Image 1 (cartoon, rainbow, N blue to C red):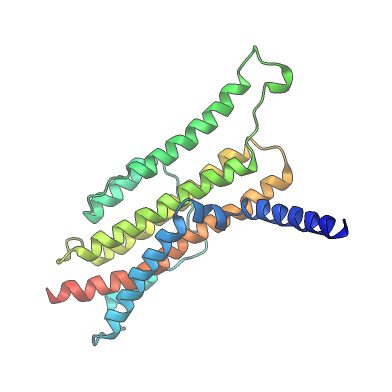
Image 2 (image 1 turned 120 degrees about the horizontal axis):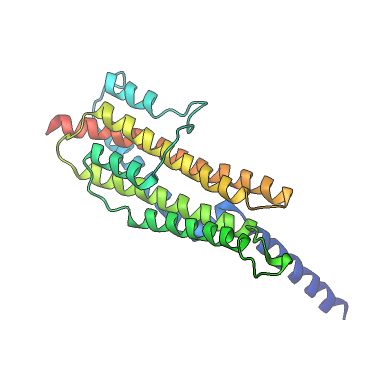
Length: 244
């Protein structure tokens, strides 16, 4: 009996740990295929680093320095206001001269908006019982939504990198490319913060709110990491296109 009891306790502890793990951004980001997209972007970045090493390049190149400076994360970043996410992302793609559908990103944002709208509608239902008149957002729902949006954002960055590397000529000057990539990153980071705030307004539990802020910062860090991977990619594009 003692052995069975010990096994039961161990199983319950494992289940508890597993459930808690499933409420982390790292787990959910991976579940939404975000980690595989980030790793693919990292691989592209490392390939560009290797190509750079195989050629004689002056690291003091003014364009290289501009890329490094432009994509550097600074305090105060991600404090811009965007009225329409889809339009802002589309404008960035046009500036980069990249033809890429953003259906997945738009669909993800639409589904989040629908979730929030349904919560608002529940507060207006006059036929509902007093205990049902307000539907609060759960931590789980909030985390899953933010993880999904972050994954689609990183996927977008990965696809932009792939298409940019396929170009044989520099269609857009590199300073504009670097500035646009940085701006796009800020737009998406701001949208993550915006989604978080919309969910926070519908949450009651203080501990859940604190946890959401913590996990959201982890989500933003994935996007910021993707920006870091872009430095070697843009540098290699400079070298490659200068030889064509």
